[in-house]
Image (cartoon, rainbow, N blue to C red; front, side, top):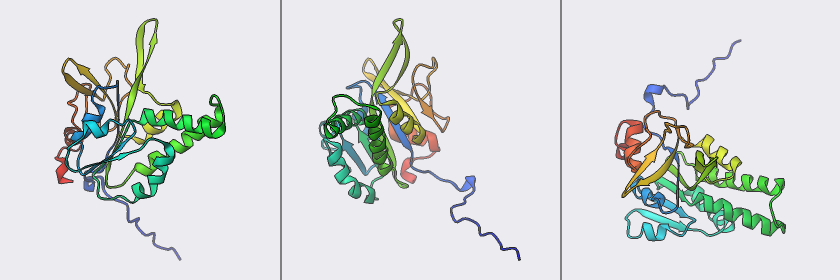
Length: 232
C-alpha cells in the first residue's frame, strides 16, 4: 500500500512571500557614522553596545534600548534574555570588531597564553558563532557594525572589508543578506553595496542596491522589498 505524502507546513509559494527580516553587516572607518546609522532602523530597536558609543550617539531616542556590555562573559550572561526577546523589530550589535578583539584577549587570559595558536583561534570562532546565532530571530532585522580594514599592494588599495578574523568574516558573510561599506564625502555619508572597481567587500542578495546609497536602513528596506517597512 502506498502512503500519501503529507505536504510540509512550511512550504510556501514564492508569490506568497512577504517582507522578512534582513541580516545586515555594515563596516567603515571610526567615526564615519555606523552607530548614528542605527537610528534609521525599524523600531523598537535593541542595540548591543560594545564600543561604549551608542549611549552618546543614541541618547534621547525613543523606542531604542541599549544593552551595554564590555566582555564576552557579560554578553554570555545576557544570552538567555536575548534569545527570549520578541518585541524588537531590529537587533543591532554595534562594535563587532571590538568584540572579537576583546574576546581573544579573554581567551588568551583564560588559557594563560601570550599569543594565539590554532586552538585559540578555533575557540574565538566557536564562541563568536554562538553569539551570532543567538542574535538571529525570525521576526527581527539583525544588524552588525564593524570597523574597516584595508590592504594595499605597492601603495595601491586592492581590498577593503570588515576588520574581523577571516573565519568570522566568512561566517557573517554567509549569513547576511546585505554587506555594505559606509564612508564620508565632505559632510555627506554614503552606503555602498556594490563595488565598481571590485575593491570593497560587499554583498546584496536582493540585487536592488547600488554603489552609492543613502545611509538610511528604512529606505534600504523599502528598496529591497518595494514597500514601506512599517507595513511588515
